[in-house]
Length: 331
Image 1 (cartoon, rainbow, N blue to C red):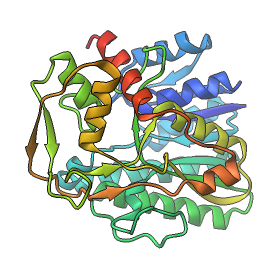
Image 2: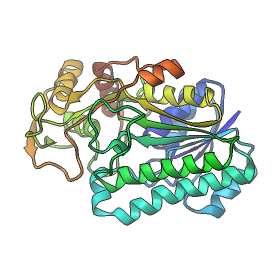
Image 3: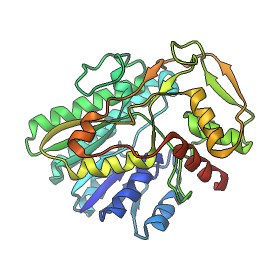
């Protein structure tokens, strides 16, 4: 079976490509490299011992996407490609709405045209807005607190409506929480361009001396230590969740939270990193970021019940693997 992975050179996409290849799938990657690197494809091949077909295209461009579909007989699509920084989405809403929703529509259109009826979508816990934790798949979605979350909710609605109009379609909407860590080989991991938007690469860059200290956005939230609480999940657990969801897809729309079900504060994650590596992380408290919520963690019982999937790796594992990648990575 051949799978198209959009954004497959990115952080979550690259790890999912490895998991797919190890599960026996053929992989075709489409990625415009706006926040990823071409050498990641070579590293995927090195880890898996298998070749990957790579197209450097923007998946909002319908003609370019159709050229890829015309050359391959896809069994399914896993759609990661998209802009993903919450803070940036507040500053550049038009870019986010255009990129993240148009790409979904273009891919859905091509799937219809070429008879591809299995679609796995990279959604996000941000679609829950300020619902009460733990977030459960059956919750009505509240208005997103930022444009990034809104684009994910809109894309979910697009795919749900397409599936209703096409009874043979099978769609998995995977709402995942905060991926961290790296492949245990240390060959692939999170490689942000510029100053990181996510917490873990910020921590690892401080540990490496590339940044002077960690900026902690707010310490006045109603949490255990005043810092934001998130459900951190190892990126390889997340990648394996995509493969299981693809394999168990049946007709209709299926929504799954992919997380650990446990909340960890920013300062608790910093402490876990020190435990895993022996490195102290200097930090400073700064103002909250616009669009951030205080607490976010998942109810993961549905994925365990229906998919037989459960996150297996610990917070310390995540920190160890993230540091293993960062200390060996040269930008």
